[in-house]
Amino acid sequence: MKLKHLVIFGVLLVLLGVAVVLKKQQKPAELTTEEYIPLNLSFDSAKVSQISIGKGKDLKAVELAKNEAGAWILPTFFKARADEKKIQDLFKAIAEAKGELRAKDKALLADFGLADDTAYHIRMLDASKKPVFELLLGPKRPQQASVFVRKGGSDQVFYTETDLFGQIGIYEDAEKASPQSDYWGERRLLTAQIDQIDAFTTKRFASGQETVTTQVLRETDPNDPAKKKWRFVRDGLPFAIDAGKIKQYLESYPSRPASKILDPKAKDYGFAAPKWQMKLHQDNGQEILITAGAEDPATQGIFIRVSNEPAIFLFPKYYFSGVDIDDSYFFGANPLAIDPEKIERFSVHTSGFEVSVSPKTDARDAVKQYLNRLKNLTVAKLAFDPNAKIDPKSKLRNWIEIKKEGVSETFFLDAEGMPIEGGKNYLAQKRDGSQPFQISETTFKGLFDNLQLLTPAPEPAKK
Image (tube, rainbow, N blue to C red; front, side, top):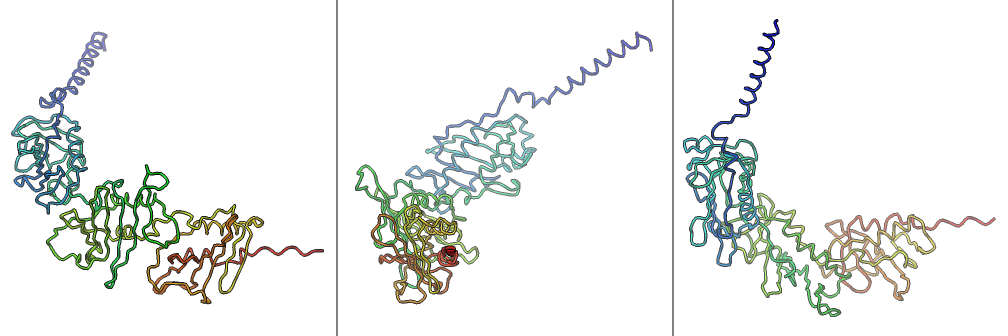
């Protein structure tokens, strides 16, 4: 091939390469404007007093509105209190959404599912019912977390990767699903400010009998009038209170939501004969009463009524077991106040064995491990049966005797040697006349089984 032909061929290759590059950089006409028309969904959320969320012709499948007190409720869903965090999260997600223009022709709206009769509608009004903002979501999703959107009254279609469907409770196929009021309901049983609660009482009801299981009060600290401290109201409890555990208990309610919000008029939920009740008092004088009714046969959940809520809650049974507690739940760690360095002597007695140890002169691992078990003693629950007492003459009585350094009185802890009838726990009691309590089978065996390990090794025979 001649040089002239090679030059011509090289020029053609260069021109072809330039043409390919230019072709790749070209965009359809409607997309070339995306850089100049960014998605802007800003609005003044402070003005919004009503929200309706619908699909197609059903524009009000979900209705949210502020009541006279300024709280969000669901006026067409038993007037249940709405989850304000979900509302604020929706406002934030819309305002912060980023996206690209994909179409601006009314004839193309149906291709994106954004025709008025197929799209999801989010309409926001102010207190006088004047429009604040409207957003339409297309159910034809390009991919799982993305969505096509347009503002009300506009034909411009934008693509955004903000999961706006998730923000309104649509997690499955958006073309088949529809907005649900239940998603927006506040499911927390207790929403009061924890630091405003200054007293609460819990009760159990069984066979016509009422048992006060917990009663605590937060009052001015006599040692520091500027502070308040929690105390037990009940006299005769065996161990001291841990205020931190009260706070943890109250703060656990938000992490234990109801599974469903129910129509208060649908049926009898068993509140005439409740199984449990909790009364909370706030420092502003207001009270909240939480009542547990019957068990739902289908889910084994518990029907719950809260005095300041219009709807009924279905509360999971595994959550209920975490709130149905007694005063022992608030006992502090190391309730026996065991300091291994200050134990002069301890003795353990069972019906078949007895051993006495002086930790200051016996540093074996078995002794240290036993002291740790004493230190980590856990109370399973209080014993409320008035007949639940340990007979001092019983041959099955076990006990632990502890002599502490600098303490004149010797401490005694008694425990029955047989499990409580119908269960695996064991009855235990301090010898100071305080209320008896139950310990688990594991705790009992850790204190009274294999005591041979504590027997001091025999001294070597003298030669």
